[in-house]
Amino acid sequence: MSHHVYAFEPPERFVAGTVGAPGERTFFLQARGGGRLVSVALEKVQVTLLAEKLEELLQEAHRRFGVDLTAEPVVETADNEPLDTPLDEEFRVGTLGLQFDVDTATVIIEAIAVGDEETEERESEVDDEDDELATADRDRLRVRLTPAATKAFIERAKRVVASGRPPCPLCGQPLDARGHLCPRHNGYRR
Image 1 (cartoon, rainbow, N blue to C red):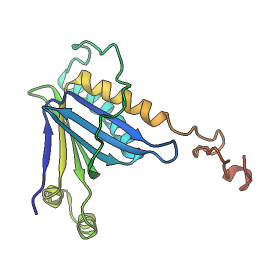
Image 2: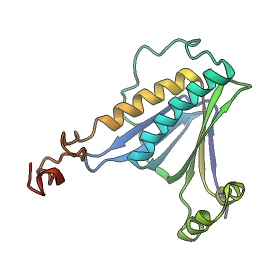
Image 3: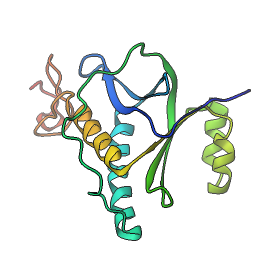
Image 4: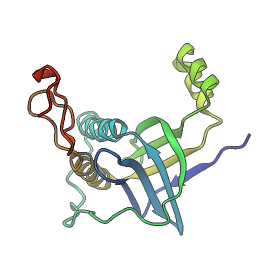
C-alpha cells in the first residue's frame, strides 16, 4: 500500500481551524501552498497539545541554540480567516511529531495518519526504535515554519480552542446551551 507525504516547506498558509457549532466542532490542520490545499482532521486535545509543545520547542531552541525569536517581524494582523475550501479531509491524525532544524532555524511539524487497529495495537507493544517503522507506511503532512510563523500558528490555535463552549466555573467541563450536569452539584442541572 502506498502512502502520501504532503510536504510544504514552507507553506503559504498553515492554520488550525474548525467546522461546526461549539460542542460539535471538527478540528483541522490545513496547509496551502504551490497550488495545493491539504486538510487533516484531529482532536481538540491534539490542537491544544500541539500549541503547548510548539511553545516549549521554541523556548528550548532559544535556550540551547540561541535562536532569536524576535529576529523576524511579528505578523501585525492575525489570521482569523476561515479554513480554505474545498475542505476535503485527507486523513485523521494519530501522531504528531515536532523537530527543530538548527541548520535552517525552522520548525518541522509532522502529522501522521491513524493506522488500522492491528497497527495501533502493535505500536503499543513496540519500543521507540520501532516507532518510526510502525508509522513509515502512513500518510503524513509535513510543514516547515519559521519561528515567527510558528508563533502565529500557536496564537491562532489557542484562539480556535478557546472559542468553543465556556467551561463550568465549578468542575471545568464544557457548558452546554441545554444545561450542564455538574458533578459538584451532585448531578443537578446548572
